[in-house]
Image 1 (cartoon, one colour):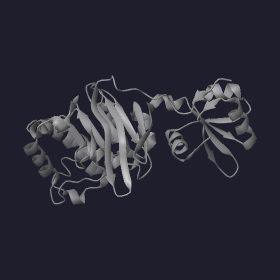
Image 2: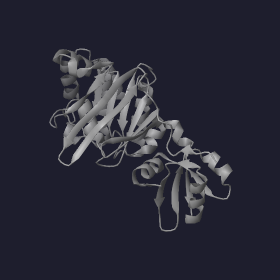
Image 3: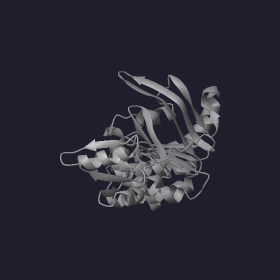
Image 4: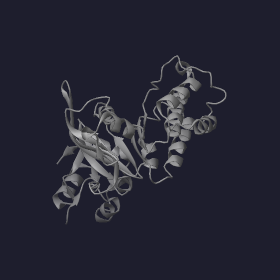
Length: 310
């Protein structure tokens, strides 16, 4: 029986027009090393960045924004290697990026209107009318116009960051856990804002999230990182074709002996073993008596990170 790969097909983005590329990036923090890591965000797409806590997602995003300086490798923004540019040129490129952090980092004593004013001074292209339109749509104006950042809920703080970024007219959004801790209604509002903004195919986004159901609805591509390295880059739709076979030991040994899966990832439980299979329908045809459930993004992440390679 012919073998098939365990994980989704790896996507080669090297020839795609990309608004963001990270090339052989490396950064050390004590015992932790990010990279060497290479990843891309093709223009017109949303890339979902997934991985367990401590995998390096936030370090990667800070490196992209140059909050943390890389020790080797480089970042390309809109097709240009920023390491070879002047400070002014880098600032112009960064002006096209909207960074939305997990925590609203604006000065805590500023009001919503003062934050908008700060952005208008920092970005000549800031569109005050667009800000007010978005802020009204999201419930920030007029009711919270004079409310201070420290008094905003997490959802309101996230909306304020989005309003400011989109009013600047950015082409690329870099978002670190934008929906974590939000109630379902506010989460849906934030997702709708991102979906609407992405209707312009000249835009792109990199979104890190532990809420993989959000990425299942938003992302075009998924990048899984663990221990500072990329484990998988695939189209989001490829995950829908995968399955998790729930097998007893003898059943697993039969599948492995048949060579149905190359480089199989297996996770042992008390009563069964989980096997990640690339094509659930093909597996079910080959082994109709075995249980094989549809795989979620969480399933794929857990099996690739925690599973034993047999």
